[in-house]
Amino acid sequence: MTDDKHMNPDDQPLTDSPAEHAAGEQDFATDAATPEAGASQGASRAEAELADLKDKYLRLAAEFENYKRRTAKERSDLFKTANQELMVALLPVIDDFDRARQHTQGTADPAALQNALDITYNKLTKTLEQKGLAPMNAKGGDFDAELHEAITQIPAPSDDLRGKIVEEIEKGYYLGDKVVRHAKVILGQ
Image 1 (tube, rainbow, N blue to C red):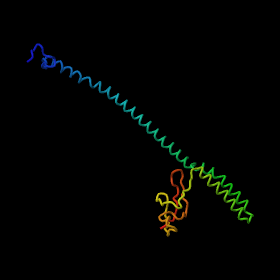
Image 2: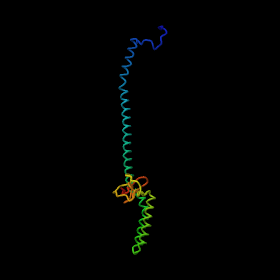
Image 3: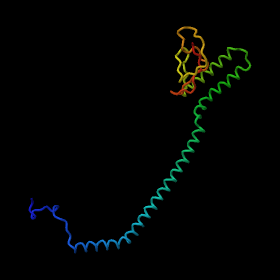
Image 4: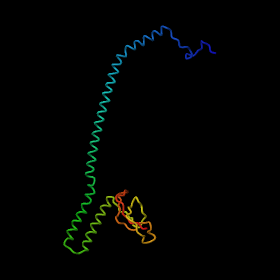
């Protein structure tokens, strides 16, 4: 047991005198009268903050609308000029076709016509390869449904071509790593 003289302040009983109670009630009464002045000041502060938030919201909404308009215009411009680089690269090939037509127009020599076609074909394939187009080599390989489209199946000419690609009807192409056209093939059975 502890001595009352040596009690900790936390251990002492909480008792208020009646005078202290009356003074405390008066403080609350005084505080109750001032909230009207404080409330009007708090309300004006809240209104100012609300107006500031509304202004920020309207500015943000306007900025977002401008962003949407700008990106839509940029996308439209991009679609209009997306193939411009490829078209400019193909113009010399078209010029070669035109020159080949003019050069072979009056000739009956099939070798001259074949030479003109070969030169133009090689230039076209070189230009397309520079732009990232690469042909698939499907003939003799295994069938892959992600790369090839099977047209039909025929009896395999040899045992090593069973289940493999016997003939390539239409060449497939890659643009970079992406397949842009599947190869149409005939499978050996």
